[in-house]
Amino acid sequence: MTGPALLEVRGLGKRFGGFVALDGIDLTINAGDRVGLIGPNGSGKSTLVNCLCGTLRNETGTVSFDGRPVNGLIAHHRTRLGLARSFQLPKPFRTLTLNDNIRVPLVYTVNARHGQHLSEAQMAVRCRELLDDVGLADKATRLPGDLTQVEMRKLELARAVATQPRLLFADEAMAGLSPSEVEEILAVLFRLNEQGITIVLIEHIMRAVMNFSTRLVVLVAGHKVADGDPQETIRNPEVERAYLGE
Amino acid sequence: MRNSVFWLLAALSGVAFLAVTRALIANEYYYFAAYVVLQYIVLSTGWNILGGYTGYTNFGTGAFFALGAYASVVLHKTVSVPLPVMMLVGGIISGVIGLGTGYLTLRLRGVFFAIATLAMAIVMQTLIVNWDFVGGSRGVYIIRPASAPIAGSYIQYLYTLMLVLAVISVGIARTIERSRLGLGFAAIRDDEQAAEAGGVPTLRLKLISTTLSGALMGMAGAPLPYYVTYLDPDSSFSLAYAVNAVAMPVVGGMTSWIGPVVGSILLGTIQQLATVTISSALNLLIVGLLLIGFVIIAPNGIVGLVLSWRRRARAR
Image 1 (cartoon, rainbow over the protein chains, first blue to last red):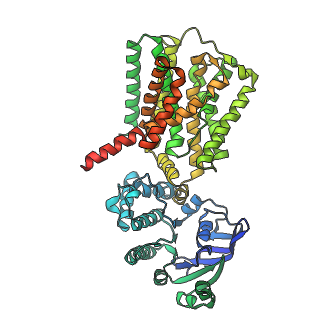
Image 2: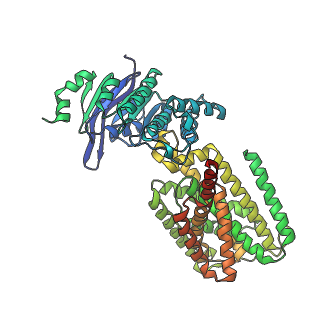
């Protein structure tokens, strides 16, 4: 599927002191894509997500979202534009019930957009829907501390989806989960994509990535080494070298 | 309970409490003692907006409080305005200082933020010590007006004002707690990055929090010169205010408006009793011991204990 570029990254670079974490990253993501982003540990995947979502500032390069430059825009502004993310290590609001965890993005993102305003009653309905979508509706009044790992990941996704994103970065949403739990999360992601959300999946579980992605992007040591059809990409010699050694 | 209902009930209980105390108590000492307890309700409620709701520990309570007091000294010496106006001015000044402190320090987290607030308090105290107009380090005498603007003695007037301020502070805290602002504060307290990712403008909310918190502390300090009649930097910037403002919400419970109220009444009363029965030096020792005890045994304070008992009773 091809459409207008939703996210356009040009020459993005980020260093931590003397360490170059990302160097000259170019990346185009089209609306509706299911992109897999892979790379060995420390290759800069999470740093890239952090730069794109505004958690970190990139020193060089430009990022534009939906034709609009977002360089220098702080994270919550990007969220409001429609750029959402889940965190690699789930970061639930641990003193708030699951319901309130979902209310935060509804109040601060959805209701902060122009021309939208959910009443308390509408928000309650929406919370229920969002939790129901990931199978957590019966735990709406519980605290995140009561959840299992896989439930925590689902809450993390539900909270990101609550912002009504156009582009979602799922940062290792499946790390440490059992195969059946991986399937559960994949099913959620497929459903979200069908609803029109463009998804970038950052993942180590190759089976999941290959299943999910229509396109694969590979980062190695801060450089993009491959970008294209998943089957062709993993046969790329440079990718093989990075993963298997010479 | 709806907010308007809560405000109404709070106002009514304030008036009822005032009427009962004014009708039944003649001994002036009790008004002196109650004033201090009420002052701590305002201080700890103000502290809790930043410390409990937003998760930033402020050790500079004494500075916000003393600046409110010194604002009154300046007003007393320049223009003569009624005390409630002084309280407003003190609140505005400490609120602005809160905003500035927030802006300069909120990139700091945890213990570093706490250290920065402590440093801010020392800087402020140094400024006051070197400002001769307000008495510098030797302090300043304030002569109370001969009569109070309302019926009764002047101390009864101060007590009444502090009671009103306490009711307003608690009302504000409770309103925030149930509002969208409170939800944003809680998100910041739990995880700032996740809050940003959820669209919460964390910096703006933190500034609102430091401003409100500072303003309440400044308002609590504004009547102090008339209460003590002699104001000096050492006692007005005293670390005791900072320690108490931390200890009272911790002992009472930090996640709810009632926590600081319970903590202030409990610790404030114990301190007043200890002052007249045992020794005035023992005050902070008692606070310290209780603080250690609660942090170890009941980190969620008395309110947390009650809630977990109730939850267990329901589960049974």
